[in-house]
Image 1: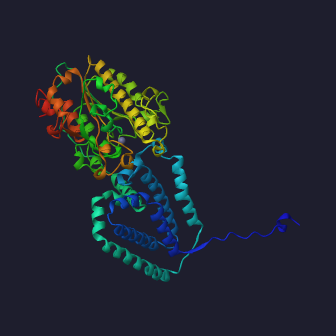
Image 2: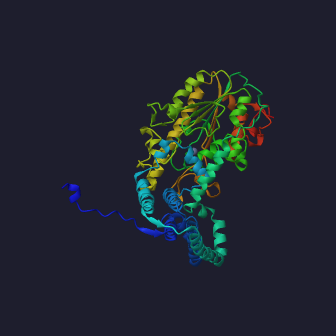
Image 3: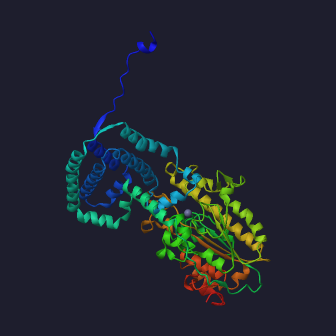
Length: 549
Ligand SMILES: [Zn+2]
């Protein structure tokens, strides 16, 4: 007799059974209860009346359940629930840990990020969170055997459940209409944190928009552009535009920060525009916006794609342009410009896993300048202070503020350690900018140089529980929108500007809207798309309008 025939027959695993409506209701209750901590914490703070808050919560739960019951159809219910569970689990982690809102711009930012950048966010705690709130509930849903009625009976039973739920939701809404209307109007961030509908809705909107964006061809801009004047010396004008990353004005000692974070720039002859606001709160918005002539109010992702930008206008004027990238790409700004990626090159002297220190670009600058014979514009898109792994953004000599936060998991570090680490990354950017200035200055015998530095957006470092950036502009704190803007001009370019006028202008308001026109002004490009009132130097030029009027 074989062993097999002797063994006791094993009972087959019996999958627990559940009715489709019951599973739909349990799913809805799970999602609203376990993945909406940020939403309800904020709601608790915003509602004056606990009764109104209770009505709001009950109404929402009824609507959640009505939705899941509506999709409780065979072959649909489980995939929909699993998608909602994973989306809600992931979104709730970022909302609860960093205060992040998952809107269309945030999805676009995530889609354009590099694997190494994204890798900093996939921490052990994130994986644990995903296991507890995503994987385990999803496996439970998979394991259940769902009883479905026949079609007509299902329609009847589902409607019998959905109609009262919607009526209860309506009654809750009507009973507290005034409170709910005033809270949602005053606190637009609240509804943006509702899981998982907002993240899924944003992902769908992003996918549809990306499909439509695919065939957009940029309309020509400033095709009438031409150079109006050379410097009296006849040397080629060279403008280096250093763009971003994630530096906030609040932590620049040039703007009054209590710590010395700009020891090197402070010793250079620069102009610091202390009241500068960004166009967006994320790279994917700010970078295309600042190189466009759309202004913050006229900017949209599609409009930027549909129109040429500053670099194209320079091209029309016969100026050589080049984009060096140590970030996540030019966001289509350099689509028609000579482009070089430093992170793709992955030079082991500066890079690890395609993440590179900005020194790599600076090291090549002098060589590049030695080949300049005509008017040229070079953009350096730096990695700057990109979070959350601030500790990887600088070399050991910039470990001046300690203790540091040596992880991307900012929530487990002391807040002061997060600020220390971020400030060290600002020190490093200070060094990068001063180095660019020194290299340009040393070449003044051959070129007439200038440098503009503008950060693309700021960063939250735990103020009001917020970290990182990307908050919708309407609710974004100043830490994310108040950015540093530095101008340096070589002796020849500086001589054409009234110094006291410029120093007064530097205390006034400035923004990303100024980059397009200020850069055209510096390069003496005459074009119908140039607006002198948006050029921060226009009113201070000694030879008024000689270049651009
Ligand atoms: Zn950025």
